[in-house]
Image (cartoon, rainbow, N blue to C red; front, side, top):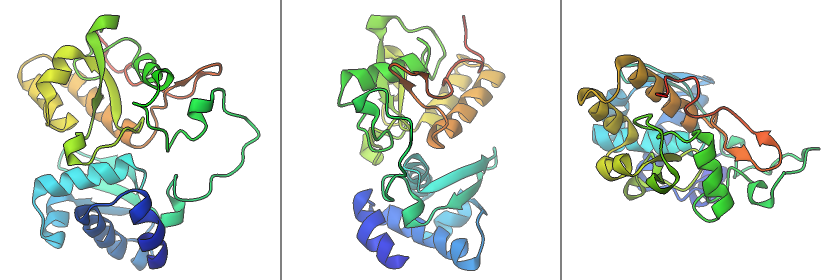
Length: 236
């Protein structure tokens, strides 16, 4: 397993030193002890790897976004329940199984490996997934007033996966800056731009996004998965 980690997983996903430390520590306390699911707090993990809370939280989000950690549960006390995946259990590292259903569009042939900033059809699919609303403030975003935002900022290692990109209005894209999505949502709440119920819905949507549950719409096959805004307190 460790050879697979060093030879396949870490180089394939371009792990930073922080990501290596976080994954190794969680793996040691979960799969090496026979636990398929593991509960931990960010504070406990930060102490264990001698990193700051901010660096630890950012790394956990990256590992969830890349599918290395399967997020089962997260609560308001920063408690996480995750499934630490083995290297060959991570999509993009293992050989994908053949399916009888061919991809509806070549750009979606390997959705977990696709760069969603690379092609217009991929960028459009993310705007369609959010149903014309800003993922953050939930306002409707006209065609010339919407853009794509990295949930985990690129400066913190966030990539161009559909798990890390959302459609948002220009104002939110500018105001969020290098904040994490969770920090920015709480800032909107404190500014009374989101209600308590809307904040809860957006935080759940963030977890669903990282877990790969909010798939973009695939051309020619209808919606491939859940929508990031519908049914979650969208302002009309």
